[in-house]
Image (cartoon, rainbow, N blue to C red; front, side, top):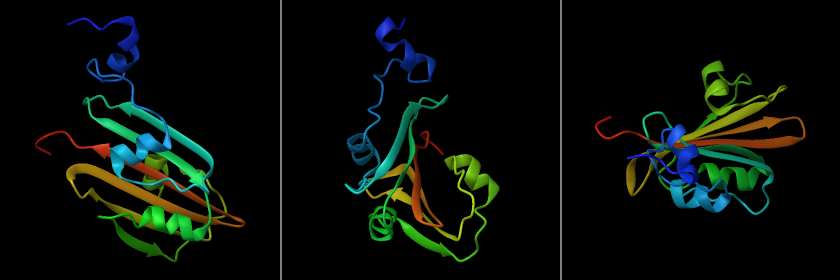
Length: 144
């Protein structure tokens, strides 16, 4: 089956003819059951299909500590606090973390309760004067 011009971007990104994913906080909530807080500032969301044809959401935003921890502690997530200040390089690369001067961070991860193939990862980064939340949610292919 050939892709129409309207679906070309989805096909090129591994979407297999599926429509583009909404790059909105509502899209994140519907896909990953992660609620972007109303207090979120500097919101950046990217959504695409992987080369394997599975959906992925990734993004970041700034907010206060309480709202960051509410996002991080969504149902089905395990929270791990890290007193050290260096976010591991592989985590930085995977989530696009560029913050310098990190004074601490928290990692939360878990599957969506009703969709065990959906992996969710959240990293809350504390730096002087700011709290930035990075997130990634991705479907695992069947059989993995």
